[in-house]
Length: 477
Ligand code: BUP
Image 1 (tube, protein in one colour):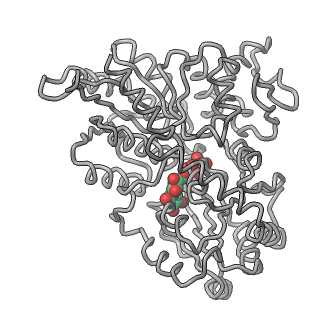
Image 2 (tube, protein in one colour; image 1 turned 120 degrees about the vertical axis):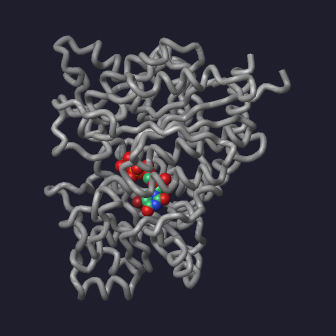
């Protein structure tokens, strides 16, 4: 049927690291002719998230926005809200709210009048599997997740169901020894696992363990990765080596920079002044430092970072996060660094505690390298722009992502670096590794080559186009 228009609904979860890949995936389906409906939980945790949703909707007026009002649902009282990361709390709030709020929305969308197309598929965030698998039992259209981390991490997530079956005492990690041996994948050292998965009864452990066995019920998994970056894990997953019976894993990476992200709508955004500052610097001369949006930089690490940057011999652009949530970001940096140091830092570089558009920063020719926390979106963004990475992983899936950086050769990962009280990194050490990254010809060449294959995947007739078009064809049948 030539007049068929696939209608895809997207349901993101909390945090930019979840929203960015969701909206970039939605943009891909839009590009190939689909109609899009965004179902977004509100309020969002950060301003950056609500801004981005607004930007998306104003750039694509044909897409529909449906909001789920989370304030209606009180959170399960057994969760101690004071000890949990606000983003994880939001995951849990969304998980608990969906049963009451989502079915009626999906019913409406799937039975829309003949003037608009009924829903062809739902693509939702990886953190929402359990509620969605059960909700979807009442619907006939297929559902998929988008995964926000590397395929290597996804293999671990899928393999958790096997691990819990294997252990005879019910403690899923009693059987792993020093490393997790997943068929078809280079072993993942225990030290690279997300710390919270080893902490019984953490919200993280609860969600992953509950959701892993349900992956088989999905119709597919979309992932921000590509063949040349993660050939091993993608093959092992799709050949049924990791866990037999998994649905197809579709590599739709690198998720490319989108025009809608460039619209400026927050008062807390200072990208334009940063780009202007970068214009004054020669090609490849500035090191960009940003350790993610979900974690605040530890106070006791900040001064060593400042010292490391000031003595590395390169100009730097340092985006510091002092608070976990950007809405709270009113504290002055001077208070933390001290007046003297703040003055010195600003002589040798630029330091800000505001949100910037990272994609645009990484694309600026003056940037020669990127110090990052091992956030997967950030890693793929750096690859897209061919910028070498220094991965300073400290939590979550960041170490597994850093392994991918190291194995693929696009950056370095000082494995012993951390954030905790025991493993603070000294200024001299920081400066030494930054120098190594910024001056390495071989890193620059490898990052440049990876950029080329990344761009090929995203070009006309490349792997992204092939996967998306094939998926749309499937929905047509
Ligand atoms: Br901070 C910041 N501007 O100022 P990751 C982040 N970002 O565009 P996360 C900005 O947020 P974890 C800023 O480009 C990336 O797309 C950035 O995602 C964007 O890390 C996204 O890199 C951050 O996956 O990570 O979400 O902090 O889950 O590892 O805590």
